[in-house]
Length: 501
Image (cartoon, rainbow, N blue to C red; front, side, top):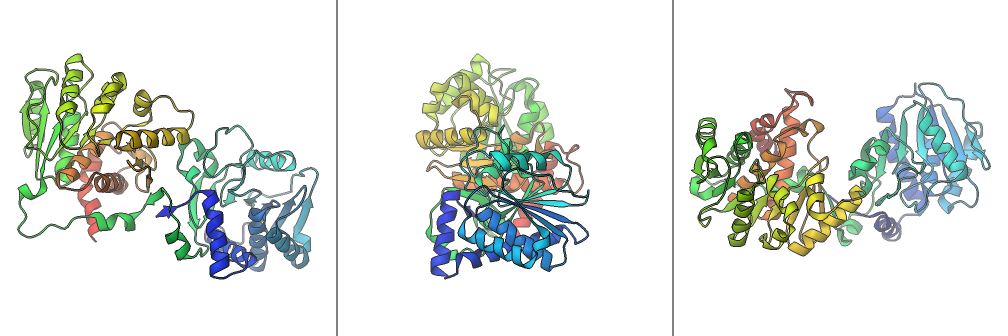
């Protein structure tokens, strides 16, 4: 799903108003109906409602929602906060509520007065929308402070008031801490950053009927990868396929005491469909690897405990390097020599990234269209410290553009940054996957896909989606606490079938 910046969304609204055509007040009404429908799915009329509405269009959405909830039999108190002029559509909805339901309506202009509410009262936050470009002050800051001091459930319309749609360099300012956020038509970029999680709660997109033509015509570099975006990528196997049809992956992994990383990555590559998988590792890991995964080929290094060199790589379709290799001087020289001679895109993970962090000149040797899979700390060791998640995203974009590589920033909503500067956020996965070896599994999946002639972009999209889907399926039998990396591998088959079905 393509989504947009807050400034672009305003243009999409404008296009819809002009070309549907529809009056802006009627588009606001349509948004309010969608918000009300979503709200009534979550909360029955046994819950009383307190709505905080501001002077802009977000406040207009809140006022229209107040009227619709009152019409559906909810007990609603509306607090309208204003210190000056109102937007035209907010003013129109102000009048509608004031005329139709005067006893449910309180206007506050100077000082915020705490309303009397019960424990089952749900608060709807419609103070500010996503177009905010300054911090809340005065009565608005007082309202947000009160809202954050109570234990009642909070629903924010479009975005929690005080939070900006993209970059939020200062999170110490007054920002609503919502339990739910109903985002209009598209998610906001800010939703995908760990820094903002405590404000957003659980977010859902509500469709307000923006013209599909407007969405198609306007370009964006922001994408949220959902199943419909992934299904078409999956290659179909023919009846006469053989193991040679699905490529040969080389995984350079392991050191003394770290055989497990080799096992996880190579087994994941096999489960992701590679025809052949060879692991190059130290001799000390031979027995463990060949016992654990008899389907895998083991290629022994000349060293007993570390990897010091990799022979000719020409017969392999893809090379993945890093899981458990350590950062010894011998292994560092191996990586330098390997990158200098590679003729195909590679996957760099774990200790390969740590070595590059210590020797950043190696970035210049990485083949174009290679895939780097850092977690935040590994990324910062290479590209420098980042003040915020937004800052990290921009640095990743700069690096992807400069070195013509794909960067997969692992985490919730794992982010793929492409060599042409696009941002692709993943929709699958869960916090149970924050466990040792999960990244090794992702590396193996990516290697298995690249071996089968998926492009680097296709492998990145399908890889992170399948990885997350497998983790989600694992929760059918495990808890988030008990989930381990092997569970992700064991559910890869179900994950692929979920796309095929």
